[in-house]
Image (tube, rainbow, N blue to C red; front, side, top):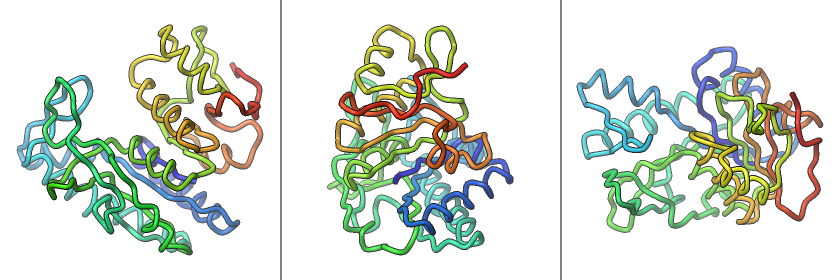
Length: 267
């Protein structure tokens, strides 16, 4: 199970505690949670404090060398260690990593018409690094090096999805600040097949910031992940509710060949 941890669940103290309790319990009952975290708001605050201007293109941070230094300090040196300490305080045995460690994640500069600087994409994942941490809870910051030894900042959802594919994970779970994926009439969709999700993106039902999250889930499913989930991280114990109950707290995405677990919509 690979969990992307981000949003309000990383900022509210009660939600942080409930997240840690959920992860530790899931590990205790025999599951193998792997955590990949974001840190956008914390990066923004650190850049502002250091007088480094933030610039975005199509919602993506332009990352020059000065920005990359701050991003790595915040993600790897601060947030990652705070999450490790949080999990350990709640009885877990967590180990902090970045994509650089053991070449867990190998990156390259993200191609495209917009030059985003040191924004990368994943070109390889070494699952043996995580396999070697059996008994521990890996906590991974979404930075990685390329073949040129340059450090790249990578979208945490993408890193989580690629790691889930490499591990052939049962589940990819994205914690968000919304309830899940909604239909055109506003109803929350409990379950979607990958093919239906593609159609909803094409017709505009899935729009804006939800598109990259759902596309990440679709790609993971096509890469061998059994289920993907977009869940509401603002709900206490959201992980346990999604994994261990039939109703869940978000939207489950499944391959086209797999029967949905839950009914298709919830008001």
